[in-house]
Length: 77
Image (cartoon, rainbow, N blue to C red; front, side, top):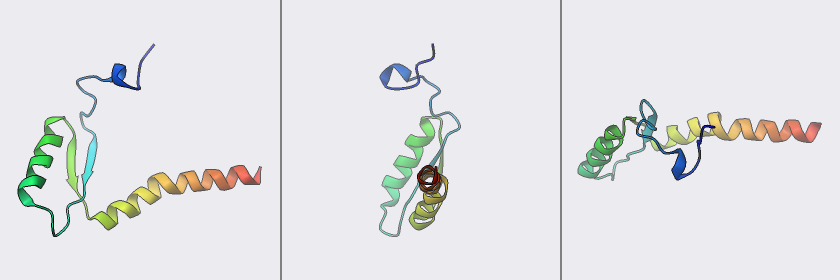
């Protein structure tokens, strides 16, 4: 049985190759951003800088929209 949730699901390669969107803006401290970027990379993930508004639009399309469509479909059944 494969454990995938909680502390028991932790493993060393958990974030290998995972994309992490970082959303810096004009007021973001450069040193802190570089520290965070390095930390994410040290986990094995791939840090990608993206505009906060673009991040929100992307998340709405790949996460929220499917949930909304599923809810609409369920209400039609």
